[in-house]
Amino acid sequence: MLSKYLKEFLDEKAKLYEQTSFIEKDPIGIPHKFNKKEDIEITSFLIATISWGNRASILKNGVRMLELMGNDPFHFVLNHNENDLNKLSSFVHRTFNGTDFIYFIKSLKNIYLNHGGLECAFSTELNTKRLDINLHNFKNIFFELEHNKRSEKHVSDPINGSAAKRLNMFLRWMVRSSKKGVDFGIWNRLNARQLSCPLDIHTGNVARRLGLLKRKQNDYKASVELDTNLRRFDPNDPVKYDFALFGLGIYEKFNTKDFII
Image (cartoon, rainbow, N blue to C red; front, top):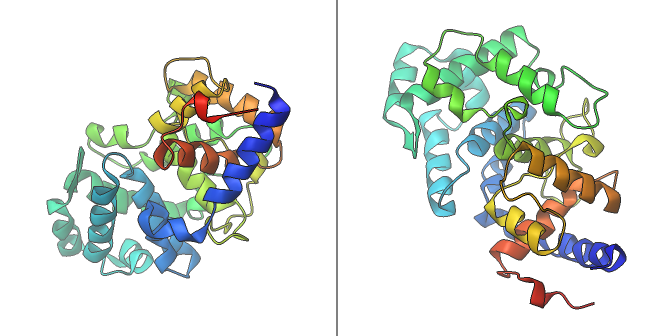
């Protein structure tokens, strides 16, 4: 496929799927219920953390998370007591359980009190082309408190070979412009040029069908390969193509015969 036509195709699909009409059925719709920066970023981080598996289940359990925090996440993070934490112990989403949830709240409090908040914790390096080292540093900060080893699997680290899909999705939500009403654009320390496409089974399969990705595993090396190709189409906002690839996979069940030059 000629890159000129592929770019035009993906630009068209990105515009089609970056619409507020898709928010209601997407995990990003949950943090859209809030207006305060801290409420948005805390909710987004927690929802992104459990964003794997059935979407209906993600939405249901995301709402449950907020209910357990009294639908006031920033206040809950800063002011919770032991009884409040005990109420979280019943929470389960796939392998993310109450033990993990309790630690996440404790760690978030530590980050807001001692590291300047989530934006600062994710922005330890400002002049990188990709945010791999930032994600690595964030994980170290996040788990600096005493914790159960099992909880570490819920925060990915690209330095260890992960595509870090959920963290990259969270960063897209926080950093990209809010002009179209989907992403929030509430962080200023990072910019869209640094973002990576959240790579999962849907985006990976479509990317391979379009010749944007050759590597078979959805890992760190595949993320770099996909990013390299997407940056050729739009170096200032490569992650906008997440909307195109995900939309093609989820809503159109895309295969190459659908693409006609």
